[in-house]
Amino acid sequence: IDGNDLLTLGFAPGPCLGKALSCLLEQVQDENIPNEKEALLAKKETGLDELKAALDMQQELLEAREARIARREAELGLSVISNLTGMA
Picture 1 (tube, rainbow, N blue to C red):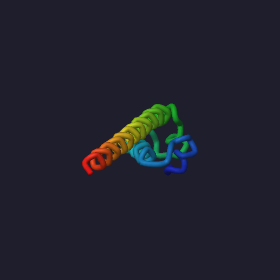
Picture 2: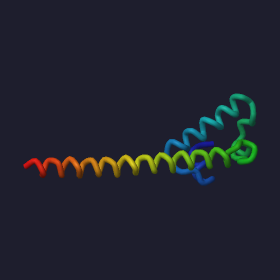
Picture 3: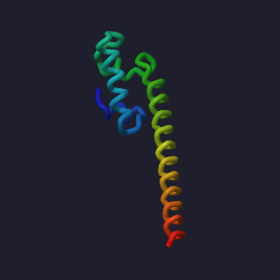
Picture 4: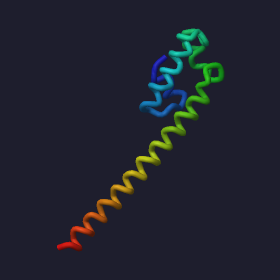
């Protein structure tokens, strides 16, 4: 399988696809599931549902963190400008 298969299952594009594929590869290498498309995409057996939920949550947390950083940078930028204009 590849990232397109996971996108069809509802995974978001990005690094999460690679993580999900790596997890599936580990399960195949550990002989927990057969290296067959049907088996790999069987969400209950492979834990894809749980993995997707965890990766979605991780992505949401990352986006929230980036938004906080952007807001803080904007606040700092405004305070620096205010300080500079107050000094003039």
